[in-house]
Length: 387
Image 1 (cartoon, one colour):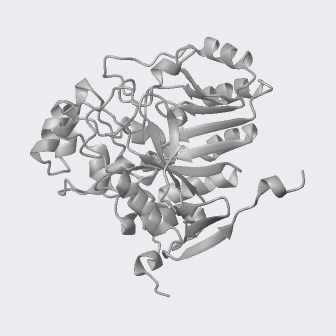
Image 2: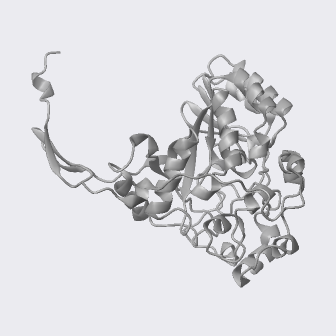
Image 3: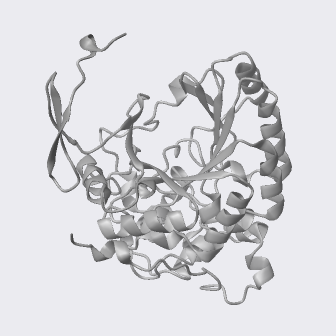
């Protein structure tokens, strides 16, 4: 048996402090309010630290018309100063390609607007709803599925009718699972978030509440002991973080995730498959293993949605299938996410897997394993089984 060295790499964590901000005190750096107040948002701020390409400079000049630019100092310290192909930089610095629209791309690729019984509440699956509680994020991903409504610069604005949303949930007993998203729910104050969770917990048929957030990665300083203590009151509570590259998992992120885990919150990760970011086997394997070391289960690997201006970041579906194929059998099952595609127009998540079934007959199923070896599993003749 051969052992691929890419799976044997030592897992290391590094702090993002002080980086480009040596004059900032540890007290300020560890304050999430300081981080937000000092986010980098303009061309002059970014040019002070980065050698921008022509494509990036042009993208920044257009940034106020589609999706705002904002990068927390913590995350900005991870961006390479001179390399436009840097995987962290590709996620967060605008490029002129965002102004190019492929005919297949959509402003609302997941069909959320057409599945809103009340503004801000998406009800697409029978037992689950998506509750959009804010239109702001700590930093803005250039491949954002909701770029049409987040950041406050596009023509379409996010409207959430709070009381109408709660009343809809109260009179819809089929809903047992609520996902808070936006924007980023963890940007809300502890008190505001506590009120939302408390109101949801008063609805008897709601069993699970989930939060989708990139705050633990963009702004780990927000994961305070006080926040964790508040969240702990609302179990069972799940948080899906969003990490795409192993360098994003700094010591600050690791420690923030540990605080959430110690508060009993189940943590999963959702990645988006992005060209030049995490579409290579060594990078993806390192990401998955580093997540497990942070007590986070790799949950979903998303095929990038058909967002307008995202073609420079999208990969082929085959790239994702090949990644899963090469990972399976070579690492623990806990490290394997489910590769999914959100069907364009609102069809929901569709799992995509390598094909391991070679053939099927009423008598047997022929399967292959991760090594390509074939195995026969005899089928049960259910007509002969005693009822």
